[in-house]
Length: 297
Image (cartoon, rainbow, N blue to C red; front, top):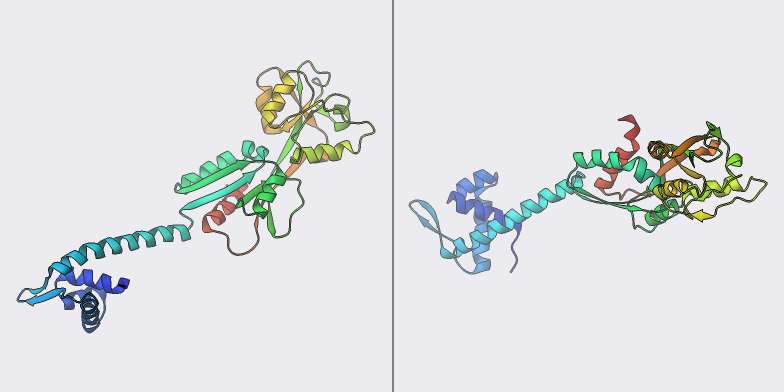
């Protein structure tokens, strides 16, 4: 047995008004059309729904039973419509972000806080990885937005400039370089370097810079994460390269010194990437616009 939503809606109106004419006026439809819908319902159910009386239309027991279910159906339909409108406006949904640790530490927390305060019913699934992993995740549709640096754009992706940061050399206060205010990578290469995570943006920068040296680079240990770099530098295992924002925090502890890195590549460009095409969900489009215009707020 099949029921269309319009017939159910008109049936509820007739029950509440106890009049076909009043229901038709309420729904802005011809009374004859309402009467036809009710007759069709009665024919489909093979039972009368109303009895005419001096007070108007009286509901039969079948009508009372049907009214309960019809109201539930119409309530659920309205709730569904409301939720879908919210989705269409970007009010609800889940956004998957794959980002480099540098951007998670420096930029994303504040920007995501602002975004979620504006759209509290959107959920963010934030995952940390290397720039290569972030790009791959978007290509393979395992992420909606990737935040990366130093990786050549892939086919099928739209790439948008995001933020920049600047690297500093982090050394122990007893290190020979600690008294310097500026240092080149060649000077750093005279000493042990705390190696970055393989496949990271920083790793690609270090490898490129090392290829221009006349001596091999000494990296006795490679670590993942700037907090780990700080710990290794404090243990006097070598020089670390960390973003300026992190360096300033670490220096406040008193055991470390941050030195200006006099290299053009010390300023890094970070990008956003999404899949090309017009099928971007509204919540993703909202967040993408928010991140793109973060510097102007």
